[in-house]
Image (cartoon, rainbow, N blue to C red; front, side, top):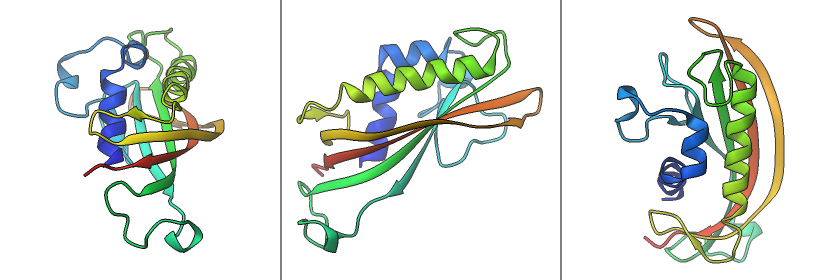
Length: 162
């Protein structure tokens, strides 16, 4: 499943891990610092929030209605790079700059997947990565400061092998 492949890719990529900052005891759980759709209270930051925004209807593509393993799928994904004001952040104490730094690392590494045959850790084959959009979300008041979010939206064409 591409979602688990993307999370494992991000959490094993040296450039992205550097932007996430020092590993600590809270990051030992699977998918720590990578969240699906919701940022939990007391979440370890900086972190990445993944949302799948859209996958076109099969009728609009040449794919079969049931996406069998190996069918080409096009999905739009949103990566939210979230950081707070904290001296532990890898770039600086500014949550805004740390969110931008993490988003830039994500963008560069995802661009590297656009080879036509890149494989994610779960076996998903990435055929293309395109349609970039990047913007700031409004900061939010957190428990001990402010949360800043840089949003990166991208279209990924992929084949799931299982």
